[in-house]
Amino acid sequence: MTGKLEGRMGDRIFRHFEHQLVRLFDYQAQNYYAVLNPVMKNLLPKMHYRPEKAAGLSARHGWGCIS
Image 1: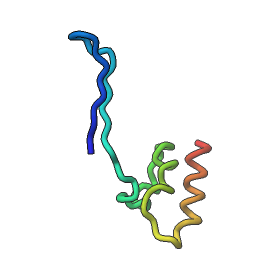
Image 2: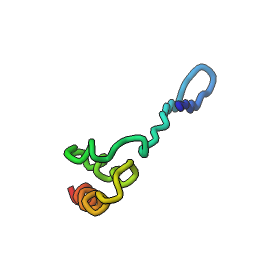
Image 3: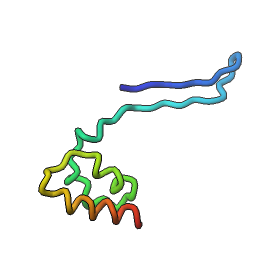
């Protein structure tokens, strides 16, 4: 799903914002374990992962908060 928000006055655009809905649970967390981006590491708990991997996921999320 995509959306757009604009603030206009006459023919001028003062604010333009576009967004796209991304369902993080549709992504496999294990595909992003080696990514160095701290934002991605903080989003790992919202992604799909096997329950037995939960402890390792918490550790990776913690490193994302620190880095």
